[in-house]
Amino acid sequence: MYPWLSESLGQLLPLIARRQLGHALLIKGTAGLGKLHLSQHLAQALLCDIAPDEAADISAVLPCGQCHSCRLVQAGTHSDLHLINSDTRSIGVDSIRQLSQTLSESPRLGRAKVAIIYEAEKMTEAAANALLKTLEEPAGQATLILVSAHPERLLPTIRSRCQQWLVPLPKPDLVLAWFSEQGLAQQDVGAHSEQSWLGALNVNQGSPLATLAYLQAGLDQGRHALLSQFSQLADQPQTVMAVHTALLANKVHLTWLQLLLQDALQLALGLTPAALRLADNLDLARRVSQVGMMRLERALTGLLQLQQVGQTSLGRPVNAGMQLSLWLNDWLANAK
Image (tube, rainbow, N blue to C red; front, side, top):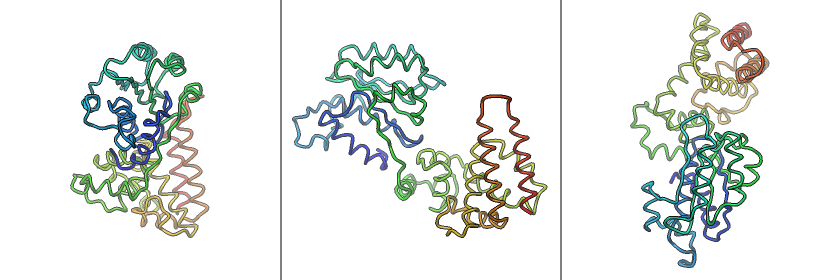
C-alpha cells in the first residue's frame, strides 16, 4: 500500500465494517495516485471471509490477508471480483452488459461480489446508460467501484448515483521520503537532490507514480536542458529553432516553460525563492525574471492562449508550429 493512501483507506475500511459503504463508489483524484491499488484493497476487504461480529474493531483487521478469499484476491483469481481495465480508447456497451449480467448472478465463493471499472470515464454514452440500472438496483451484495482521474467526463447520472471519494494529493515530504525508499538515487537517472525531486513532482502535478516514471525515464534532464536553452535565447537567438522544435515535440514541454515563466514572474514581484514551483531551476528563473514583470505577464498570457488554442477541436485546424513561432518571436523582441 502506498503511504499516501493510508489515510483514505483508514477512513473507508470502517465504512465497510459498519456496512455503511454505498453499493456504488466513485474513487476520483489525479492520475498516478494509485487509485486502482486502493480500489483493489477495498475489494479485498469487501470479499474477506471475516464476519463483522468476529472482532471488536473489525476495521482494524479488514482485510485479514490470510483467508481463502484474501489469498485469491491477492493472486488475481477471485471469481467474485471483476475488473474492467480497458487498454483501448473506450469501454463499450458490451463489456458493461456482460458485467451487469455477471453481477446479477449469485456469488460463487463468498457473500459478496465486487466490480471495479478502472478509468470509468472511458465508458461510451451507451455503456454508461447500460450501467445505470445496475447502479440503481445492484443485485444482492454487489458493490461497484468506479475509478476515474477525470470524473467530470462521466455522465451526471452516473456521478449522482455514486458515493464519491476524493483521493487527495499527498504532502510533498511524504512523497520525497517514498522516493528515497525506492532507491531512486541508485537508478540510472542521475543524482537527484530533494529540491530536484520536488521540481519534478510539481511538473507532474503532484502525482507520485507519474513523477517516479518520469524520473526513471530520464525526462528530467530534458527539462533542465530545454529551460536552460530558453533562458539564454536573448543572448543566443540562433538557437530559437531548436527551442521551437523541442517545445513542439511534446505538450508537457510547454508546461515546463509555463512553470518557469510563473516562477520568474514571482521573483520579479519580489516573492521569496521558497515559493517557486521549480526551485531547482532558480538560477534560470532569476535570469528570465530580468525582462521585467510586464513582459513576463505578456509572455505568460500568450503562452496560456497558445495552450488553449492547441486544445481546441472546433473550427479551422490550428497550425501549432506557426502559433509557437509567433510567440517565440514576440518573446525575443520583448526579452532584449
